[in-house]
Image (cartoon, rainbow, N blue to C red; front, side, top):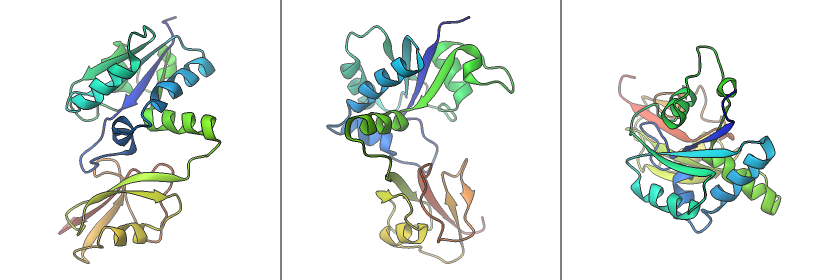
Amino acid sequence: MEKATMSVQELSMQMGISMPKAYELVKSPGFPVIRVGTRILMRAIGVTNAVIGVEANKPDAVKHLQAIVGAATDIKVQMLKTQYPQGGEKVLVYHTLGRVIKEGGLPLDCGVVVMNCTTIANISKFIRTGMPLVEKCVTVDGSAIKEPKNVIAPIGTPVADVLAFAGGLSQTNCKVLMGGPMTGHALNSLSEPVVKTTNAIVALGGNV
């Protein structure tokens, strides 16, 4: 069996998602939670190596990560080609480790555990402070958003309130998506709440 490895999805995003929590973690003083969280999970799930994949269009993230990892031999930072869907499990595993996940298979089938860096950071924070996940960094963007921005929204906040914080909608004939334009789903009601998987709210105007 191939050596067990943890592959970390770090800073890979789709169009319309400009700066998820992952990117802010790199630029903030609290960034070492990525390193700490990675080691906590490596010990918990029994893996000996971790690879953190970062797209090439984020050189500052690569630089910070390499500085944090330092001379460690069990955690490696790997720069990846900027392309979508680089953060997909099968694509990430292949480009970081050269292992192929068969159709219908899971990363674990080839000895890999894939973790999102934001999840790792939240686990690290919980272990250190006891505070569970209570808020999300959400990109609010799209042609029908008056003031596109990134916001920190408590989980449970109605989408309507998040849109209002971004200046509201510039037109009534638009489609609002929970998530990015590639994988998001259209909302039937703006009363739907921000949930733990929300990374973006996108409003598209015109004939969509």
